[in-house]
Length: 212
Image (cartoon, rainbow, N blue to C red; front, top):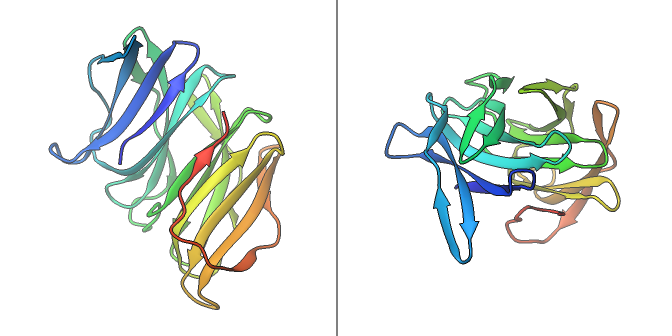
């Protein structure tokens, strides 16, 4: 699926997707709204090797966006995107999880404006992993991995509450016991930590959102 964020500094939208007609390349374009019309700049490739699931969020402190995506080889990467006019350019992608690790089947990118940091959350076999990401120029610095699941996770989604400065992650646990579970977490420095996992839920497939 494609994703989109609004760059308030540029006054434009950044749309990201994978091009299934061209080897699943990760691509992006800048959208400009005028009245009830929208126009797009040229398409730019952010990963020629292929992308799968993709999220994009805007950092109003750095005035840049970050793309978090699953690679075609089941790794996880992140890259900084900068809008100039109707074009977008990218920094060097950061490898968060190596190709072949079967990572990122479900992923979410959250922006914590109180900390000026992102939280990347993604699934791995038998775990859900999260870490903080910070834009520095066109590069990304990162905190340590925080794992908070030991069973097979599915259908993961996450949301950030900027009023409480907390993230909530929801996912389906395959066993021990099977069912929907959720956990709250927060940023401290460059680390992300979670509380006690809530179990026993009866909800449908979750969708993610984030506060503006």
